[in-house]
Image (cartoon, rainbow over all chains, first blue to last red; front, side, top):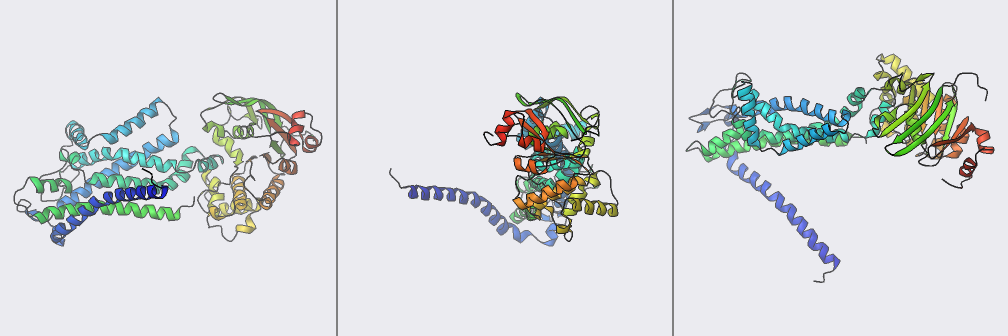
Length: 283
Length: 254
């Protein structure tokens, strides 16, 4: 075939554009279907009331609260741990056999299937530490799952702070820790937060890790302490869809919409932080 | 060229290597109290390695191995002082101006704050004094709270000098401080150096031979990691003892 360069270019651009469109289609479809079928179910009562009649009526309030508890519990554990690890790896650790092992471990941690995390959490937190099936066990399991994402994005944020800033500070006789605390961290923080929130919002929708560690099948009350079980949106959705007969479809779609909406809100926060950071960034 | 005071810095058998590359070979010389020592030489002659050895920034580079000793006021900086102490006394102004991403005031106050000065009045005093000494005060006194990154290149470099002065060092190192500046900004930076002469020992690494001639009391010529010659500026530029110095100055290589 003897096509002119211009024709080849047109073909190439068409293919690239097509690929991009195909990526958008499933997202748009999911959202459209969820909104169309789920929106009618959503009301103030749906969001704030306990489920009734074996979940066939009433609201999903405990599931929303449960998911929030789990998300914030996981953030509380994973964010400090992940950021501190990233600081150690980027700022202090020398390139050695040992740091390579840590980095390989982190990469592999990211590749472990979520159901394996669930079983791990069951074995370690629920049984070995005797936390029982509880918010504590579930949050810790989710936290471990988030760690690789948080560490990786924090490392990138730290490394994006120019080396010259560090040297300028060190050259004034300022210690390494002070340099990290006053120059590196303030400039890396927005990036750390954005990456971490994006990672966390993904785990908010996970079902497998909470299945064995915290999620209650039907618990129409709020948890009393971190050692209590709770309902959670992803698991509730699974239960509604497969375990309970004669549930109105609108309830299932409504639950899915709330879950997606929560994750979307979290992502929105991350996007806002990022855009504000970009407009303030001076280098 | 009368030697009255003891030397500020004594360099003894200094060798530096990066993995397999020898960057500095058997350096032996003194830097006098309150002189401006110009260091010239072609690329890869070890000038920057030398500067970074003086305030132990080389410590950050794991590939860098050093032997020999550097004495500051008679104390070995690698064995008798810790790195922060050395860097507080021997500060560095880099090739490219590196204002930290904060206000002009905070840039200058950065060092003193980290070293424990908390009092606002005291900080204001230090900032004004330092900016004046770096010939920047008049240009920025009305906008101390605006970002240091919004200044022009020449102003940024003088801001970096002011930031350096604020920690009250004894020695200031300049690593090609004017390489990114226009001639007028360069002249202002050089003015600042001359003005600082009666209070600080200064070492200026430069690719610009004429700049070394303009501000240096003495000049050292480095070539391939060796100190070829060190002498009074006039002497070195008018009657260099080594043929290689002469060749470099007359532009026959490098």
